[in-house]
Length: 144
Image 1 (cartoon, rainbow, N blue to C red):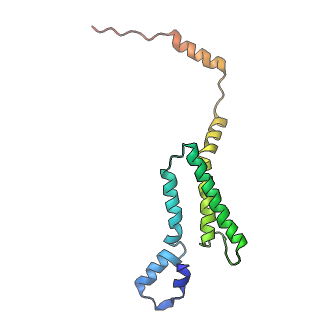
Image 2: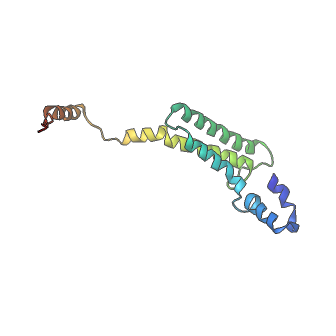
């Protein structure tokens, strides 16, 4: 909304104000549009994603944000969630979706993929390996 209000200011702005407006609000990749992604990424990186409760709340929050963002764009007339539109609905929807996917990939899916790709070891091989370690005692070192 701030960018839309400043777009009406026109070319009569001072050069420094126009530069700040461009970098922070209206250029192709405005800083204020990407600030929510940066902050959510920092929070996610600093969270303990090894805990199931943290994973649950982050996935739930991401899904809720995606539904709210994309749902609002679907229901409210004039609101868009088009990719790279920079609208609030698009930022909320795509950010929530990204949060949920990253947590899923880091938590439950990573454990599932690690389990699925693990080489199966039979119980007999495991017992034989344990016996071979037990059969050969370590040599004693004598101090002289």
